Image 1 (cartoon, one colour):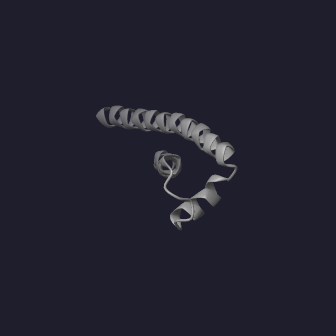
Image 2 (cartoon, helix red, strand yellow):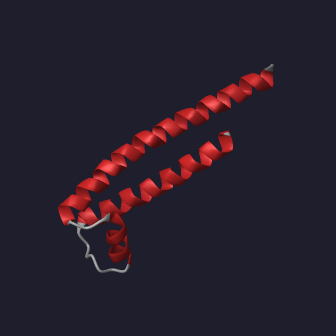
Image 3 (spheres, helix red, strand yellow):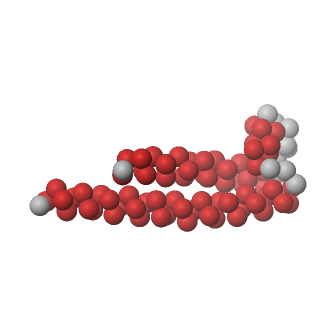
Length: 86
C-alpha cells in the first residue's frame, strides 16, 4: 500500500514539474518571438552569430541568449521527465 502511495506522489510531482516547464516554455516562446521580430532574425541564426562573436555586446543579445538556453534546458527536462514517467 505504501509503495502505491509513493508512486502516486512521485507521479504527481512529475506532472507538476512538467506543467511548470510547459508554462515556462510558453513564456520563453513569447520572449524569443519578441527578439526575433525586433531584430528580424530567427533564434537559431542569432545563436550561431552570437556564439561566434558576430552580434556585438548589446544587453538584449545576452538576454536573448539566456532565454534560448533556458528554453533548451526545459525542453530537455520535460522530455526526460515524460520518458521516465511512462
